[in-house]
Structures are given as structure tokens and as C-alpha cells.
Image (tube, rainbow, N blue to C red; front, side, top):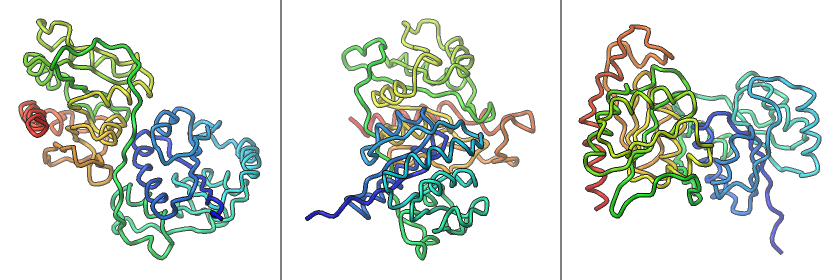
Amino acid sequence: MPSDPYKILIIGPSWIGDMVMAQSLFMALKAERENCVIDVLALAWTKPLLDRMPEVNQAIPMPISHGVFGLKMRRTLGKQLQPTHYDQAIVLPNSWKSALIPWFAKIPLRTGWKGEARYGLLNDIRTLDKLALPLMVQRFVSLAYPAEQSQIPPSYPTPKMVANKASFAVPPLTSGQKRLIICPGAEFGPAKQWPAESYAEVTTALIDEGWQVLVLGSAADKAIADQINDFTAQQNDNQLINLCGLTQLQDAIDLLATANAVISNDSGLMHIAAALQKPLIAIYGPTSPNFTPPLSDNSVITQIDVDCGPCFQRTCPEQHHKCMKEISSSDVLTFVQAFQHQNT
């Protein structure tokens, strides 16, 4: 008779990029225990990501907003989860409160990094050696294995999200036309944004070659998207389509899957494009790809060395923004064209 499935509850992260990288953990768990069932407890807006990860059995919406303690609600949710009889919980956030629900749910094995001294709440607690595990994805995937292996840098599978057919209405491509998607926003702050003029130089060149360009982002990114449109040559035959603030996360994922190339700042959409295995040019400035790079073999990272960086600041403390302004649009355009030569 087949054995009962091993049930795992993951307490998921709150950021898009982190949740994309968590898929590597889910894949590693499935490789270790083929019959395991993985449920992910996370904020409701992450569901479109989880729905496109074949390893996930179900996404359980977290009813408590990010940053809210909500002890009573955590206790109630934990008790509601008790009848599921999870065998293990893996807690990815490092906060003390994030470990409460598995404890209230009486899950017998509760795994995670020590974080905010979570002794008792976690009974399989690991002490992180940041030098041994420099990448966030390594820190996630390490939790799939026994504690004695937790400081050994694990190999990790790259995320592979499975998109649905895009249902958001965009102008169809003409015969043989290619689609560039640019993601010029950055929730972290303007320091991570490649200038609108630079994006426009690339989009103008590719529109002249017959490409269609979609601009994806939140409503907060509409201003820079409008600037890109203004800087783009006026004779663009309406081939630059600004979708910032018009799409939901599920739309953005499924549209990214239609791209022939993606150019993005260091952002959640960058990680999604990588997980969809799309040709990706990832532009880094004040942050570093040494911690959260795009996880795919189909991406290139462009970053220049500056004396003041990477500074990890939301706005440029030196007021010059050299780390982004001096990244050449011609170099980025060359990367796009190189991808196309590889795929022809």
C-alpha cells in the first residue's frame, strides 16, 4: 500500500521576488519526498504566483497584513489548521510572529532559521552562516535538508513557473513581429530605476526594427512609463503600450510569458521573467546580484562598478545616480539582439 503523503506547510515570504525564489525550495522538497504535499500560507496577493507553481498543492491566504502582529488571529488560524495534521512546517520569514501559526497548529516539526530568537516556537532551529550561504535561494533550499547539512551550500533547481494563456487584451502581434516587455519600476525606490531616457533609446531602436513594446508595472510606475513614451520617437505606430496600473499580477505573469525579450530593473517582475525562462536583461544599480540574482540560464546581468556602490539606498545619497545613468543603452540593446541571434 502507498504510504500516506508527508504534509508540509510553508510560511511564505511577502515579496514577489522572494516567493519566486521559494519555488526552488518547493522543487527540492519534491525531489527529496516525491509524495509530499506542499501547502503555502501567504498573503492573498501572492496566490497568482503559487497557482503557477506545479509543486504547490494549495495556497492558503494569510488574513493578517504584512507587519501586523495579530496574535488572536494567528491563534485562530493555527487552530483551524490543526485538523490537516501537517507533518512539518517550514517558516521562511525570520520574524518571531511568523513562527506562531505552526506552533498554534501543533505541527510536530517546525523548521526555520533562528531569526528573532524563536526558540520553542521552532524545534528544528538553524543558525545561519551568511558566508556559507550567500544567496537567498540557498538559504531557502537548505531548509529542505536535515539540520546537519544546513551550512553546506546546496545545489538548487531554478524556478520554473508555468503561465496560463494571457487573457489581458493587448494589440496582437503582426506576422513575424517580436515583443519586448520592459519593467521600469521598482517598489524599493527610485535608485533602482534605470532612467526613462535610457529605456526610450532601446525601445525606439527596437520599434524601428518592427518590435512591439509593452510596459508593465504598478500604478506607481505610470509616471516613468509616460516619460519613456514621451522620449520614444513619435513615429512609433502606437507600438509602445503602457500597461502600468492596468494589469493584475496574474495578467503580468501571463503577459511576460509572451515576450521575446524582457528588460527589467531589479524587481519582482524581473524574478518572474527569469522563472518563466524568458530572455532577460536585468539591470542592477544600488543593489547587488550577489544575494538575489535572477535565477535562470537565460538571463544576463548588467551593472557597472562605482566608488559609492552598491549602497542599497532607496534614493541616491550622492545625488548623481551614476550606477544607473552610466549603464549604456547600446550595451543593453546588444544583449537583446544577441538573444535573438541565439534563438534563430
